Image 1 (spheres, helix red, strand yellow):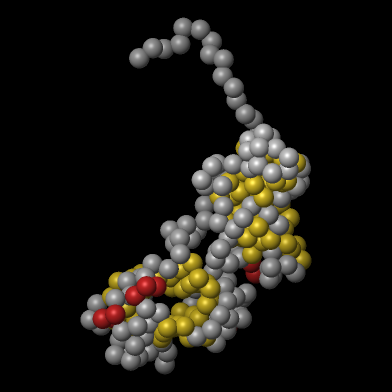
Image 2 (spheres, helix red, strand yellow):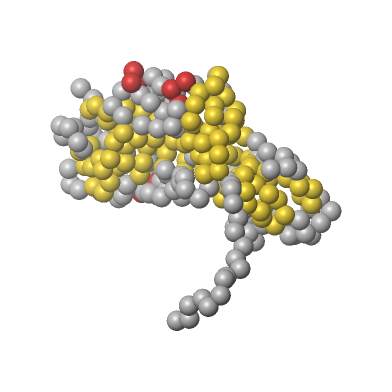
Length: 256
C-alpha cells in the first residue's frame, strides 16, 4: 500500500448536476425526463422502463450527430412541479412514474420510477421530490407488472407479479392452492375511497393473514371507504388450508 507523498489533484463535482452521452439522431428538450438505454448507457428522452437519471437542464440537439457526439446535463435531485394523471390532495408521498419524457402517472406498470409526491398543488398537479442516487422504486422487486381493470382469475403463471388494480368492484380470483400460484402482490391504484380491491379464494380454500379468521371461500377486501392509493396485500406461498398474506397496507377485512 502506498500513501500520498504530495497533494492529490482530483476532480470533484459539486451540486446536483450530472452529464451523460446522448443517443444518436435525437433531441432531448429542456426539462424533459431523461432515461438511459440499458444496452448502451446513452441518454435519451425517457421511454417507459428506462432508468430515470433526472431532468434535462437545457435542450440538447443531437439530431445530426452520432451516439455520444453530445452530452446532456441533467438535474438529478430536487423538487419539480409535474402534471400527474389523477393526482388529488390525498396523494402526498405516493410514488410517481414516467411513461415517456413528459407523461407522469402513479401506476408502476410500464413506467420508470421518478420520485415521491411532496405536496399537492391543484387537481392533477403536484410537487415531486426526486433524488436519483437515494430514492428507489418501492416496487423494484417486481419486474413483471400488470394492470387489472376487470375481473381476473389468476393462475400459476401469475406467480411473482405485481397487479395494479385501478377499477372499483372488480374481483381477483385465486386458483385452487394445488394449482401452484406462489405469491403475488395486489396494489390498490384508486384515489382515496374510490376503489375496493376484492381477492377471492377457491371455494375450498382460505386466505390466512394478520387478524384474519380463517374460513373457506371468504374474500379478502380492501375496505373502500378508507382505501388509499398504494394499499396492498402481498400473498405468499400456500399450504393445504389456502393462501397466506405476508404483508398488508391499509384496512383489509374478511368477507362476512
